[in-house]
Amino acid sequence: MSGPVVVLVGPPGSGKSTVAALLAAKLGKLHRDTDTDVETTAGKPISDIFVDSGEPAFRALERAAIVAALQDGDAVLSVGGGAILDADTRSDLSGHTVVYLDVSVGEAAKRVGLGVARPLLLGNVRTQLKNLMDARRPLYAEVAKLTVTTDGRTPEEIADEIAEQL
Ligand code: S3P
Image 1: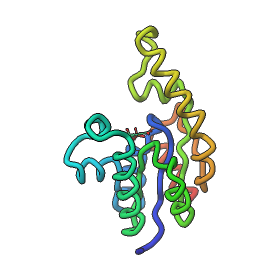
Image 2: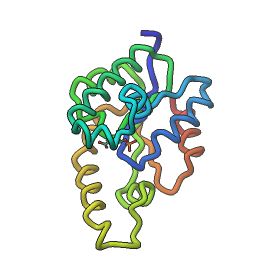
Image 3: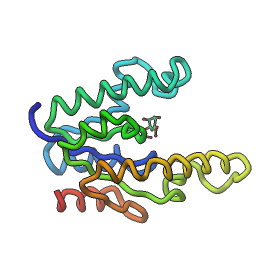
Image 4: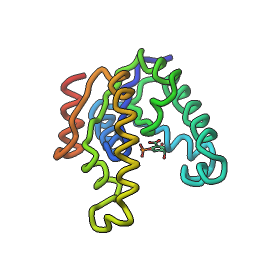
């Protein structure tokens, strides 16, 4: 391992990938994203992995991508929102600088394109997002060394705050 990694965790819509890219540039480090690494390994988009092979197959690829990225070290790493579901991953993250990007359900819904325009179509999906966030919040908090509020703030402001607090 060549040094601890700054790892951004949080639910879909918390801004992990965007903030990680800005923070990496600011710190002069490489930005890695495990969703991108998984897509490269599988040779297809994540949505196709879920449809073709199921979520457990995706989680196995995600776990392997996280192990590889932590091993390589010296990077700012964004991981998929569900990465912290894996107990081994939560334990592996303890040696690294984990930042939890906190976001409200309403803001996350907006950022992932679940607006309020069609409540009949989107209401159930928003409820799923809320349930997913409620279930995972304790896991994000468990691994985090630093929690940053993202509602109403630009990715640049968030990256600046993280850089100041590292
Ligand atoms: C997932 C979040 C996604 C991606 C996959 C599963 C999740 O990443 O890893 O679709 O379980 O929350 P983002 O958090 O970047 O959307």
